[in-house]
Length: 402
Image (cartoon, rainbow, N blue to C red; front, side, top):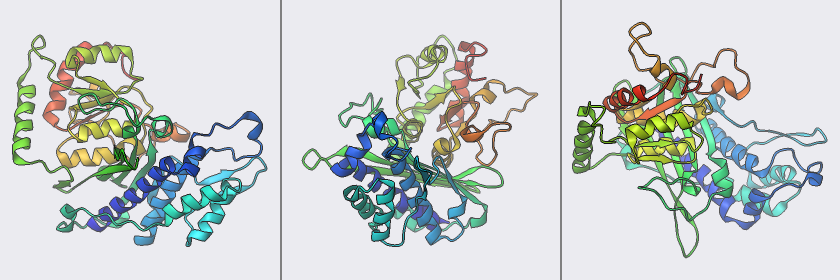
């Protein structure tokens, strides 16, 4: 099992290299920012280069996993289709070819004969990557491969990926926008129960060398299975004790008038005003807007904020599965916001964790896999309970998604 997680870490880094190459290599970056003119559309493929980068990352993950673990590639699902169609009706299936030369030829067909860009992209796709974490070397956990499903979001926060600035300043560690908000998300779940088991979040753009302008990234992972919980965020004892103390203070604060805004939350820039108003009464100024569902979840994973809350139904299983698995390994989780608000002794008092194996009944297209009730991501169950006890009195019925 740890062999699968090790390989997921490696392919996430390979995917991050592709993402960085598309921003850093001039031949590829010009395609990334190119706006197609109306008159050009009949000569080019209906999809833009941004979609190609997404699909290529997704296919690299799928085919590398299939090569190492036969049968697993077929259980990897994601947002993107790998079929490209031009206006003449020609269909091309994008895949990772056995050789770099064959990949160049295939990409050249997709990119309307742009040989320079095809060669640059094929080179990074076929580069070998070594990526290890010593914390995994001593871990051997056996989970049957046949129960595993995988959700992939190849490049989350694509707008920031294309247009995001490299010099956005953080607000207490949280970036409101910019390349730091881009993530590659890989979440592994149990096909029978829908419970998230393993998660990898790769953040390709963390720090930039001001001399070479090259970016370095960071990778986070977690595994939670049958009582075994391991993750990449092992805290020093002193820091862990400090956080436990701070959490206890938050948990013991029950007076609504004296809540002192001890909670911090990251929110979507598109969050409803009514929800933001309710949150402001719980969090005060410690409410941070940020881009990217994957990045906002990562802020909770990193401990930069206590809570990520989103009341709309526009996040999907591929957005949440990876972070959910890591949060489970940390002792937290990710719950359905609407079901939390409807929770009672009649409906059951268990916290309604998001699951990843069942489609939304009656939905079509990507909405089949939407998190329809919104979500709350958290690191501590006690914190979740206290946070909701403070938030709910400030929310009017209908303030969240219906």
